[in-house]
Length: 169
Image (cartoon, rainbow, N blue to C red):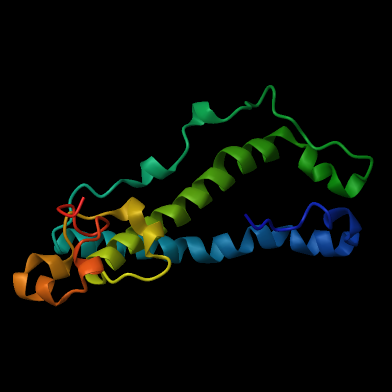
């Protein structure tokens, strides 16, 4: 697994870069979340109108509160001698960040990816090097598997792929 290197470099960054960089955590979410929500509504409607059922709900992607290790009383906080980092030492901030921002934003984008993978598997059941990653969005049949004439035109690997053909198992 290739790892992103950030811990080795963080302390080497000038303070001004970190102060500029920290608000940039939230800016993309503030800008993107309304559009992602609109996209989720549109994709859900599309799936409903083409007949999809048993689509997992958003709540399946959100971790349960009980799974979080810390509560307000025992939340660890960042301690440093540097006063510019003291804003991170507030328990409320840590709870907001750890219980709301992280799990809900990750869940939102994972949910959108899940919905898009369903659409991809439905309309495009053609193998490519990343298609195995779409197995969490497996279908009973793709659009191309409904009609015998279309199914017979598929490559055997596409016709018999269990991601978009439950009969292939």
